[in-house]
Image (cartoon, rainbow, N blue to C red):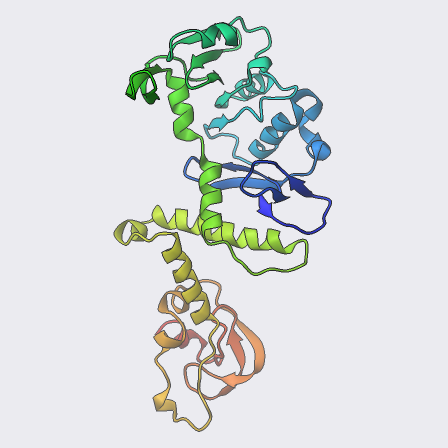
Length: 334
């Protein structure tokens, strides 16, 4: 959710959410919170390209987000019961199975169609940690009902119950933490689910607080915050990120420092001798000036050349400082 409290037809209200009023975004991302694709909520009829009448709105959203990914790669999709509710039932899992995409997700108890698993009342009377499963050999999917703090229903087309895992829970009777048997597909669901919450936490941590009455301004600021969060994930995966780890705030400060240094004009007055000009590294960071990418000479107002200090009417499009055409090559190589 993108917070917005003005008047707009796309504004949503979701009770119980940390952000109750604002624009709703559908997002597809990794388990760590790196966004692969996102798009705004457009109403029930906003995803007509994938037959929402058959899959329901949640299923149509999933198919729409997956259509942007490369077709030849292998994926495993994890989703909650919002996308398997309404009229979708198990049809979304069947569609993903036909596409060759592995998936695991929770499903509501009244959406498992005619799957003959033990009903919720009888399952609630069993010992904590018990489970019941049904496997469809024709469609290649499994439905598991597990007795945890509450009854949990999970469906998958790639994972099963075995090997059984161990879950730690608090027991009121024993007044201590006990270990319960847990099906493998539920363990995998807990490990891979939550990327959206991680992304929301990162964006909310240092959200841009500049306010405006324009309806598009929160979306624009959200894209900038999201780009910084994406940059942090990419930096952590590089060699520089392994040698010198930075948190999200450190990466944000580094980006601001580079952008301020890049847009700074050289403080060279006509009366100052050319020999007393500041070093190039103090005017433009070397990793920008010497990277050899997208540096073009473009017309500009009369400014001082950053190399020789004389007046010129051209500047570098990337460094945003004045440079003579004859000084252009030397300025980006010395």
